[in-house]
Length: 137
View (spheres, rainbow, N blue to C red):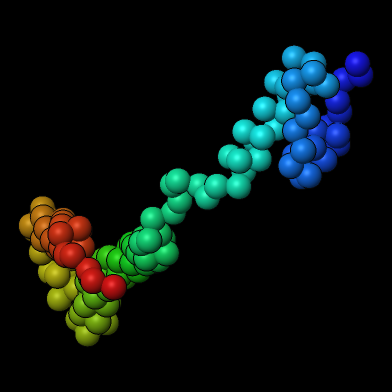
């Protein structure tokens, strides 16, 4: 007996006609059983899918990325404003009186560790504050 091809097996399943044991060879019976199992499995819904909160989770992750970028920009802007404020103060004092500008620069240089500690503390505070705040979206 000739071997059944895919189209013939599909036709047998669609018609619901399963010939008796005498007309099919053992290999054809196994093929027909495999096709039946395959189409039964394809007809069922997947057991696991996306969680119900998938869209909210994606939105939250994207919002967190946007917030991190904004926070980094804010931190860099705060440091830039501090540095430009010191430079502006030195420039204005130098224009008014060169001795005052030199005194200001000497004071900045002598207290550089205090200023660096204040800047590092400010940046650290901003970093910790941004990490600990629970944002609700």
